[in-house]
Image (cartoon, rainbow, N blue to C red; front, top):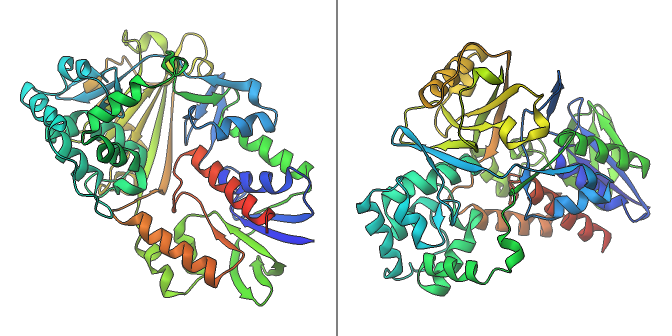
Length: 457
């Protein structure tokens, strides 16, 4: 019987265990988690009728792998889609709607670009050069900022694209790798010679069903933690062993597999899947080929939840929240009007706000107290919205080094490391957000691919 160890009980590790065990394969699977809970960054707080996400809030509905997994574990009927509503960008000291007909702030048609007040007429004229400017030479990699600045100029980049992209990866867009994040934009530009021409063509060719006006995100009525908890219970029903408070201190390659040491006990495995953040690798692997992970940066972020009586929040805007241009002097980077976006999250007569703190290069999350972070967030919100009185309660959640930075060249370095591991560490699988996957569905997909690789050996 093949023995498999998984290190880390976040969504990647739990999904890998599910896919290994779901078809009754002749396997022994042990999952080791250093903390006392499963889920990693996923953490749902339930109190007084509120369902509050302290970490990730939801996932992109178009990435169907997670929805498929939800149905496999019996939670498909608890999925809820976000309320359709306008998202906003805070730029030039005011809230402006994210123009319709854009993808992550990138125009897919002309009318949104021409009518938005986010971009000046000079900026609109410069953005129009995309139609005549030849495609950039296809180098191995460039930054997201360099690519979009060359296509559209600074104005559109700073006020429409950057606010929407920066929060996804928590990385300065002038360092963020295009080929690790949005290679499809480069491929479109190469094919059509113009990014907007290509996006217009793709939108025109979409099936009508995809043009239906529905929310782009999915959640669970019981919060994302309900999904994590169901994965745990289903994995244990199928014979998986999940060991909490077990810190893996050594992973040693042998002639026929690996010796894994956790809390003083050593066990032999044929395959090992490591899903932890890359900072942990230096504890187990000394090869110079892993040197990249010692220097790979990550951004620390925090969420600030504020609960109010509904009449305290003077917000008549029908929308889901806003992101903030980096040109604005704020500590927060975005805010979700949670009660408007997720009806199930908030009791009747209440309002729930969730602000995000933590930009690349600042140290607010590391250095400020919870009280200071709440104060800074409230000061910023008071510039943008009208709030009356103090909140019913606040919750600050810090996620230290939570968002690995994919700097220019990241994908190719990771490709080389993965090739080295495959050759020199057969049966070892390093996966998770530090490599290729950032969003929850991406982590699930990587877990499934890895499980299938093991099962097909």
